[in-house]
Image (tube, rainbow, N blue to C red; front, side):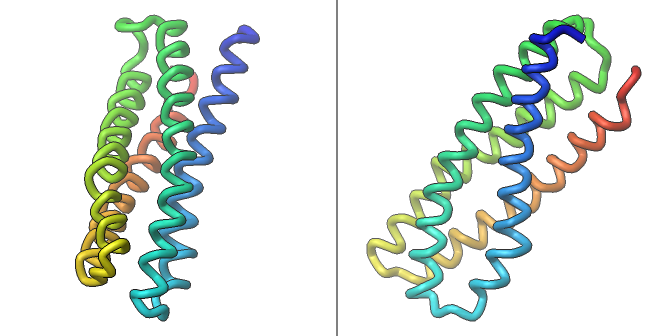
Length: 152
């Protein structure tokens, strides 16, 4: 394995760790801990957390796209083994879901917090939660594909 591929793989896995790790933290640790807070406290906190986390995910997505594309080309591009194409496809779906959360759902949370419209904010946060669960499942399947396909 060349040094360029090793560096790309390191950065790729770092981006994946930031993204999937952040989703695990938010869904399994932060969400239950905030459950007892009143909406007037909980929703502004979610807005602040999402605002910061989505910036980190945006950086991770850029790194994952660049390094994944580079590695895919190094391993044959269109002729690469099917697991590489499966990982790329799953990653693109995850990125599209992230884009929907970031650019369609998150602004609804922001507007609801600014207007102190707690029911609308809660509905938007619930939408984020459902989409994060989908992305977590896709992320685990993608990592599983990577691990199980080694040596193909």
